[in-house]
Image 1 (tube, helix red, strand yellow):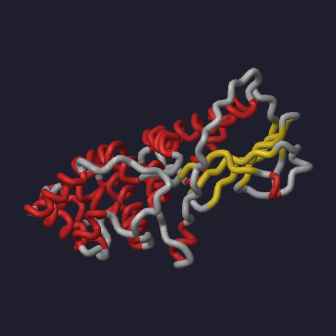
Image 2: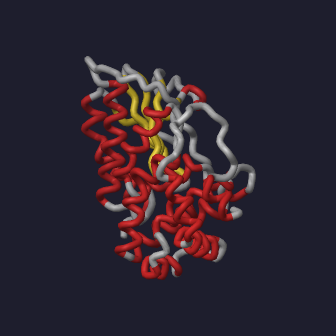
Image 3: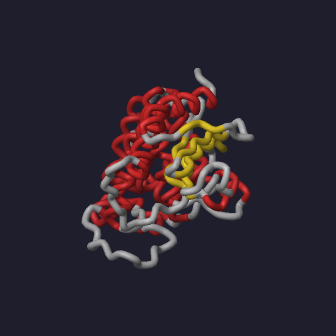
Length: 282
Protein backbone atom coordinates (compact mmCIF):
# COMPACT_ATOMS: atom_id res chain seq x y z
CA UNK A 1 0.00 0.00 0.00
CA UNK A 2 1.32 3.46 -0.92
CA UNK A 3 1.70 6.08 1.77
CA UNK A 4 -0.02 9.45 1.54
CA UNK A 5 3.08 11.28 0.28
CA UNK A 6 3.38 8.84 -2.61
CA UNK A 7 -0.26 9.44 -3.48
CA UNK A 8 0.25 13.22 -3.35
CA UNK A 9 3.31 12.87 -5.61
CA UNK A 10 1.18 10.85 -8.03
CA UNK A 11 -1.35 13.70 -8.20
CA UNK A 12 1.47 16.19 -8.90
CA UNK A 13 2.82 13.93 -11.66
CA UNK A 14 -0.64 13.85 -13.19
CA UNK A 15 -0.68 17.67 -13.35
CA UNK A 16 2.71 18.24 -14.99
CA UNK A 17 1.40 18.42 -18.55
CA UNK A 18 -1.40 20.82 -17.60
CA UNK A 19 1.02 23.07 -15.72
CA UNK A 20 3.52 23.04 -18.60
CA UNK A 21 0.87 23.85 -21.22
CA UNK A 22 -0.30 26.83 -19.17
CA UNK A 23 3.23 28.17 -18.72
CA UNK A 24 3.83 27.35 -15.06
CA UNK A 25 7.29 26.52 -13.74
CA UNK A 26 8.09 24.86 -10.43
CA UNK A 27 9.53 26.97 -7.59
CA UNK A 28 11.15 25.85 -4.37
CA UNK A 29 9.06 26.10 -1.20
CA UNK A 30 9.94 25.97 2.48
CA UNK A 31 7.42 23.22 3.25
CA UNK A 32 7.59 19.57 2.21
CA UNK A 33 3.79 19.56 2.15
CA UNK A 34 3.56 22.37 -0.40
CA UNK A 35 4.20 22.51 -4.15
CA UNK A 36 4.26 25.86 -5.96
CA UNK A 37 4.25 26.90 -9.61
CA UNK A 38 4.44 30.42 -11.01
CA UNK A 39 4.07 32.13 -14.40
CA UNK A 40 3.16 35.51 -15.90
CA UNK A 41 -0.45 34.60 -15.16
CA UNK A 42 0.07 34.16 -11.41
CA UNK A 43 0.87 31.39 -8.95
CA UNK A 44 -0.58 27.99 -8.16
CA UNK A 45 0.01 26.19 -4.84
CA UNK A 46 -0.88 22.59 -4.08
CA UNK A 47 -0.90 21.83 -0.36
CA UNK A 48 -1.36 18.58 1.54
CA UNK A 49 -2.71 18.74 5.11
CA UNK A 50 -4.77 16.48 7.37
CA UNK A 51 -5.77 13.95 4.66
CA UNK A 52 -6.74 16.77 2.29
CA UNK A 53 -5.07 18.02 -0.89
CA UNK A 54 -5.93 21.60 -1.76
CA UNK A 55 -5.39 23.74 -4.86
CA UNK A 56 -4.81 27.50 -4.36
CA UNK A 57 -4.17 30.33 -6.80
CA UNK A 58 -3.03 33.95 -6.75
CA UNK A 59 -2.80 36.60 -9.48
CA UNK A 60 0.64 37.56 -8.11
CA UNK A 61 3.99 35.91 -8.65
CA UNK A 62 5.24 33.46 -6.04
CA UNK A 63 7.77 36.02 -4.78
CA UNK A 64 5.08 38.70 -4.38
CA UNK A 65 2.15 36.67 -3.09
CA UNK A 66 1.46 36.59 0.65
CA UNK A 67 -0.74 34.03 2.45
CA UNK A 68 -3.82 36.26 2.20
CA UNK A 69 -3.41 36.68 -1.57
CA UNK A 70 -4.33 33.05 -2.32
CA UNK A 71 -7.84 31.76 -2.89
CA UNK A 72 -8.84 28.11 -2.70
CA UNK A 73 -9.83 26.63 -6.05
CA UNK A 74 -10.38 22.94 -5.26
CA UNK A 75 -10.16 20.39 -2.44
CA UNK A 76 -10.13 16.59 -2.34
CA UNK A 77 -9.59 13.97 0.33
CA UNK A 78 -6.50 11.80 -0.10
CA UNK A 79 -5.46 8.92 2.16
CA UNK A 80 -3.09 5.98 2.30
CA UNK A 81 -5.71 3.67 0.83
CA UNK A 82 -6.65 6.03 -2.02
CA UNK A 83 -6.69 3.94 -5.20
CA UNK A 84 -5.13 4.70 -8.57
CA UNK A 85 -8.64 5.61 -9.72
CA UNK A 86 -8.96 8.09 -6.84
CA UNK A 87 -5.61 9.66 -7.72
CA UNK A 88 -6.52 9.95 -11.38
CA UNK A 89 -9.83 11.62 -10.50
CA UNK A 90 -8.17 14.18 -8.23
CA UNK A 91 -5.53 15.03 -10.85
CA UNK A 92 -8.23 15.34 -13.52
CA UNK A 93 -10.36 17.58 -11.29
CA UNK A 94 -7.41 19.86 -10.48
CA UNK A 95 -6.30 19.95 -14.14
CA UNK A 96 -9.79 20.96 -15.24
CA UNK A 97 -9.84 23.73 -12.63
CA UNK A 98 -6.43 25.02 -13.75
CA UNK A 99 -7.46 24.98 -17.41
CA UNK A 100 -10.74 26.75 -16.67
CA UNK A 101 -8.79 29.51 -14.94
CA UNK A 102 -5.62 29.87 -16.99
CA UNK A 103 -6.00 28.28 -20.43
CA UNK A 104 -5.78 30.71 -23.36
CA UNK A 105 -8.94 31.48 -25.35
CA UNK A 106 -11.00 29.90 -22.62
CA UNK A 107 -14.71 30.28 -22.12
CA UNK A 108 -15.27 30.48 -18.38
CA UNK A 109 -18.51 29.15 -17.02
CA UNK A 110 -19.64 31.32 -14.14
CA UNK A 111 -21.40 29.42 -11.39
CA UNK A 112 -24.14 31.23 -9.50
CA UNK A 113 -23.43 29.24 -6.35
CA UNK A 114 -20.78 29.43 -3.68
CA UNK A 115 -19.28 26.13 -2.58
CA UNK A 116 -19.86 25.79 1.18
CA UNK A 117 -16.79 25.11 3.30
CA UNK A 118 -16.47 21.69 4.90
CA UNK A 119 -15.97 21.41 8.67
CA UNK A 120 -12.48 20.15 9.54
CA UNK A 121 -11.87 17.07 11.67
CA UNK A 122 -9.95 19.15 14.19
CA UNK A 123 -12.79 21.64 14.66
CA UNK A 124 -15.45 18.92 14.94
CA UNK A 125 -13.53 16.74 17.39
CA UNK A 126 -12.70 19.75 19.57
CA UNK A 127 -16.42 20.43 19.92
CA UNK A 128 -16.15 23.98 18.59
CA UNK A 129 -18.39 23.17 15.62
CA UNK A 130 -20.40 20.12 14.50
CA UNK A 131 -20.19 18.33 11.18
CA UNK A 132 -22.99 19.24 8.75
CA UNK A 133 -24.53 17.49 5.74
CA UNK A 134 -22.26 19.34 3.32
CA UNK A 135 -19.19 18.00 5.14
CA UNK A 136 -20.69 14.50 5.06
CA UNK A 137 -21.15 14.82 1.28
CA UNK A 138 -17.55 16.00 0.87
CA UNK A 139 -16.25 13.05 2.85
CA UNK A 140 -18.47 10.60 0.93
CA UNK A 141 -17.14 12.04 -2.35
CA UNK A 142 -13.70 11.11 -1.03
CA UNK A 143 -14.86 7.50 -0.76
CA UNK A 144 -16.68 7.62 -4.11
CA UNK A 145 -15.01 10.22 -6.38
CA UNK A 146 -17.60 9.47 -9.06
CA UNK A 147 -20.11 11.48 -6.99
CA UNK A 148 -18.27 14.80 -7.29
CA UNK A 149 -20.18 15.84 -10.40
CA UNK A 150 -23.50 15.08 -8.70
CA UNK A 151 -22.38 17.18 -5.73
CA UNK A 152 -21.56 20.14 -7.98
CA UNK A 153 -24.85 19.75 -9.86
CA UNK A 154 -26.72 19.80 -6.53
CA UNK A 155 -25.14 23.14 -5.62
CA UNK A 156 -25.71 24.58 -9.07
CA UNK A 157 -29.35 23.50 -9.17
CA UNK A 158 -30.38 24.74 -5.73
CA UNK A 159 -27.80 27.47 -5.05
CA UNK A 160 -27.12 25.64 -1.76
CA UNK A 161 -26.45 22.04 -0.74
CA UNK A 162 -29.49 19.79 -0.23
CA UNK A 163 -28.39 16.62 1.50
CA UNK A 164 -31.61 14.63 1.06
CA UNK A 165 -31.52 15.08 -2.71
CA UNK A 166 -27.82 14.21 -2.98
CA UNK A 167 -27.98 11.05 -0.87
CA UNK A 168 -31.38 9.69 -1.92
CA UNK A 169 -30.87 10.27 -5.65
CA UNK A 170 -27.13 9.71 -5.98
CA UNK A 171 -24.92 8.61 -3.07
CA UNK A 172 -27.13 5.93 -1.52
CA UNK A 173 -26.75 3.68 -4.56
CA UNK A 174 -22.97 3.58 -4.14
CA UNK A 175 -23.23 3.12 -0.37
CA UNK A 176 -25.73 0.27 -0.65
CA UNK A 177 -23.54 -1.46 -3.25
CA UNK A 178 -20.70 -1.34 -0.71
CA UNK A 179 -22.89 -2.72 2.08
CA UNK A 180 -24.08 -5.61 -0.09
CA UNK A 181 -20.60 -6.47 -1.35
CA UNK A 182 -19.23 -6.37 2.23
CA UNK A 183 -15.65 -5.86 1.06
CA UNK A 184 -13.64 -5.26 4.27
CA UNK A 185 -11.49 -2.45 2.86
CA UNK A 186 -14.42 -0.50 1.42
CA UNK A 187 -16.58 -1.14 4.50
CA UNK A 188 -13.85 0.20 6.76
CA UNK A 189 -13.33 3.23 4.54
CA UNK A 190 -17.05 4.00 4.43
CA UNK A 191 -17.72 3.55 8.15
CA UNK A 192 -14.64 5.54 9.13
CA UNK A 193 -16.53 8.44 7.57
CA UNK A 194 -20.03 7.60 8.82
CA UNK A 195 -18.95 6.89 12.41
CA UNK A 196 -16.91 10.08 12.69
CA UNK A 197 -19.63 12.25 11.15
CA UNK A 198 -22.36 10.70 13.30
CA UNK A 199 -20.44 10.99 16.58
CA UNK A 200 -19.32 14.59 15.96
CA UNK A 201 -22.21 15.85 13.85
CA UNK A 202 -25.29 18.01 14.24
CA UNK A 203 -28.71 16.47 14.86
CA UNK A 204 -29.52 17.06 11.21
CA UNK A 205 -26.52 15.16 9.90
CA UNK A 206 -27.11 12.34 12.41
CA UNK A 207 -30.62 12.07 10.96
CA UNK A 208 -29.17 11.85 7.45
CA UNK A 209 -26.64 9.14 8.41
CA UNK A 210 -29.00 6.94 10.44
CA UNK A 211 -32.23 7.46 8.51
CA UNK A 212 -31.66 8.77 4.99
CA UNK A 213 -28.59 6.63 4.33
CA UNK A 214 -28.59 3.56 6.58
CA UNK A 215 -32.38 3.46 6.73
CA UNK A 216 -32.07 2.43 3.09
CA UNK A 217 -31.03 -1.02 4.40
CA UNK A 218 -34.79 -1.54 4.86
CA UNK A 219 -34.29 -3.89 7.82
CA UNK A 220 -32.44 -6.44 5.66
CA UNK A 221 -30.89 -8.63 8.36
CA UNK A 222 -28.03 -9.83 6.18
CA UNK A 223 -26.94 -6.30 5.28
CA UNK A 224 -27.39 -5.15 8.89
CA UNK A 225 -25.18 -8.04 10.02
CA UNK A 226 -22.55 -6.91 7.50
CA UNK A 227 -22.52 -3.46 9.12
CA UNK A 228 -22.40 -4.45 12.80
CA UNK A 229 -18.63 -5.06 12.90
CA UNK A 230 -17.93 -1.60 11.42
CA UNK A 231 -20.50 0.66 13.09
CA UNK A 232 -19.59 2.49 16.27
CA UNK A 233 -21.22 1.53 19.57
CA UNK A 234 -23.03 4.88 19.58
CA UNK A 235 -24.52 4.47 16.12
CA UNK A 236 -25.35 0.75 16.13
CA UNK A 237 -28.48 0.77 18.34
CA UNK A 238 -29.84 3.84 16.55
CA UNK A 239 -29.48 2.25 13.11
CA UNK A 240 -31.05 -1.00 14.29
CA UNK A 241 -34.02 0.89 15.79
CA UNK A 242 -34.39 3.03 12.66
CA UNK A 243 -34.63 -0.07 10.51
CA UNK A 244 -37.09 -1.76 12.87
CA UNK A 245 -39.26 1.36 12.79
CA UNK A 246 -39.15 1.63 8.99
CA UNK A 247 -40.26 -2.01 8.75
CA UNK A 248 -43.32 -1.28 10.94
CA UNK A 249 -46.68 -0.07 9.63
CA UNK A 250 -46.05 3.44 10.95
CA UNK A 251 -42.61 3.49 9.38
CA UNK A 252 -43.96 2.41 6.00
CA UNK A 253 -46.51 5.24 6.11
CA UNK A 254 -43.75 7.69 7.00
CA UNK A 255 -41.60 6.47 4.10
CA UNK A 256 -44.54 6.90 1.75
CA UNK A 257 -44.81 10.54 2.79
CA UNK A 258 -41.10 11.03 2.19
CA UNK A 259 -41.47 9.69 -1.35
CA UNK A 260 -43.92 12.51 -2.07
CA UNK A 261 -42.33 15.57 -0.44
CA UNK A 262 -43.70 19.11 -0.89
CA UNK A 263 -42.13 21.23 -3.65
CA UNK A 264 -38.68 22.58 -2.87
CA UNK A 265 -38.70 26.14 -1.48
CA UNK A 266 -35.26 27.80 -1.52
CA UNK A 267 -33.70 29.85 1.26
CA UNK A 268 -36.03 28.61 4.01
CA UNK A 269 -34.61 27.91 7.45
CA UNK A 270 -34.09 24.16 7.90
CA UNK A 271 -35.50 22.30 10.89
CA UNK A 272 -32.97 20.90 13.34
CA UNK A 273 -34.31 17.36 12.94
CA UNK A 274 -35.62 15.79 9.74
CA UNK A 275 -39.09 14.29 9.50
CA UNK A 276 -37.95 10.75 10.17
CA UNK A 277 -35.72 11.87 13.02
CA UNK A 278 -38.76 13.41 14.69
CA UNK A 279 -40.69 10.20 14.26
CA UNK A 280 -37.90 8.29 15.95
CA UNK A 281 -37.28 10.78 18.73
CA UNK A 282 -33.73 11.48 17.46
